[in-house]
Image (cartoon, rainbow, N blue to C red; front, side, top):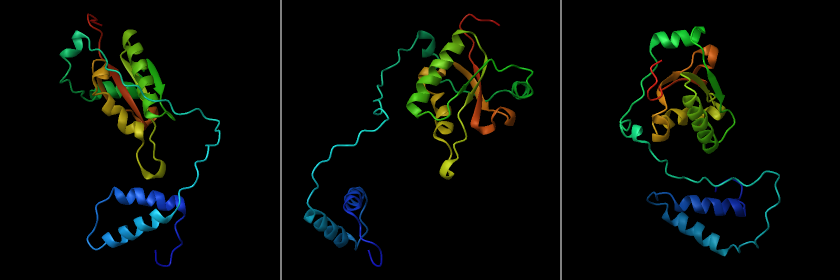
Length: 192
């Protein structure tokens, strides 16, 4: 680095790992070879024991196949459509009640996925039709929120697909684009 500070040991190790995962630009191979030679000269530090932290270790995510009921076999190609305009207007104005709501703020995606699935299954079993899912706008550091992007994608997965009839961004008085109106599918044999 010309005119800059020297990289520390940890920074050099990290840079070496990053440099190995990139494509080389012609004429820069010599720089990488010189860096690797410099890295080889540095002796590895003795292993240190990690300091005790107050937070528990992050749990490993266990992925198990979800058994599909016979009713779901016909839903494989199902695509969710947005709510009809009159339905969204009634929800917005409070003429059609939101029968339940869930707030996923501050959750990791793996945690939110399980909590949302449980919520929707229970709401579907109770025969609820319209629920509000609050994902948050997640505009930290100039990017859209992870849950805001992920939840609509989850709705097309097999475990969710048979539960949901349609969904759409909520109106401003219910959270705007940080929330979703979700219409749950009718239960089999339910005519109401």
